[in-house]
Image (cartoon, helix red, strand yellow):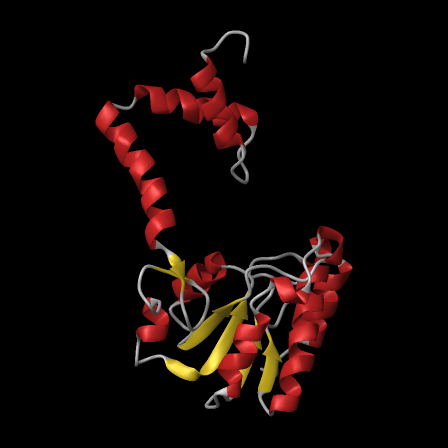
Length: 200
């Protein structure tokens, strides 16, 4: 690409390629799309990126992204503030909120323990979670990390820290998805489905 395109276009493509899930071909398409924008649209696009960095920060309570002191969930008095759902990233909150079933609040760890990747417990927002629970009024903490090696390790690590505090710690149930076929399920999924079975 560098041989046939203007250097600014090459640099823009490289910036898009740094985004997760964007390969060089997609990055090139995005860069070319930016070239079709009017100058005003391009400025709006650039300003939105700059503005999000200037105005969005971590919620002082749950560590979710917000432009206020507290995020909308923490600021909502109708939520059950005695139940905290611990998630890996702010994107996970969006997934839970889509269900319209969970009425508690959240805590975002901003990652999972992964020694191979250099992510230690100190890199995560665990101290902030312990501080919240230390203030009292929390009856249950739901560990909602992904069912990966790192997710399981993080859930176990955090639960060991929480149990002495007298808080009920639960883990999301994992198993077969709705519409799944047993024949195609892996051993771990089947084991979790058996382990988390409910009476009907």
